[in-house]
Picture: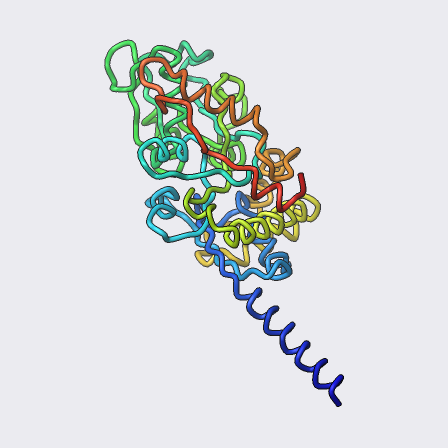
Length: 330
């Protein structure tokens, strides 16, 4: 009887511990709306990878008026998806964001121009009208223009900047000579609008030597002082990378999962399938660890932007390997 009672007590204790572990909540703020750009996180939730790690994850879509840096600093999320230029700029301004993982290995940022404008090289951008995204997305562009020696105030010899909405209208309506696009999204919107690839001139930021890291995972620095938080983030990163691996191996299923989570109904299977195909190229070669060489390249790019660099000094403590070391093993 004693052994039976002891066994029951142990079982109850184990169940209680498991229940407590399963209650570890994580709120993830995305950089943009629900789409295949974030397939790994939706897959990880749908396939139970987060649950297996004892996590209850809430995924908050972003939008045109959502700045992940502000959400994180304001306590609206535990972890956010953000681009490194925006995160480092925020850090220098007093919001100490720290990169804990880097699922995206490559950059998908481009400047897409109409070929009929006569633009063939970056030098031809002088005195042109260019569509640019803001809310933290403008930093790579400003760095590039600074390196080219082009002012962005519309003065002669520089470029005129049009604050671009998150669409391709300025190019289609010929309000701008070039617009910001991503390899996995807006470029294909231009194609779907009737343009043929030969009617476009595309400058990939990676090819222009101003490539910076995109779609990393960031938390606030003070949270990392808590070992329990580090452990929670390690489990989150581990499950997230399982989600990304699954999305690469089962793209059709991953697209369906994304569409199931799109409460707006704005996304189409065709576009999301196209998007995930390109996204998988950007996550290729990444196990979630931040490559130090990629980090240093990004920092160097942001520091050497001519007279108006994105950041003014070398960041200290802007990334940690503690989470991925714990999640993936050193």
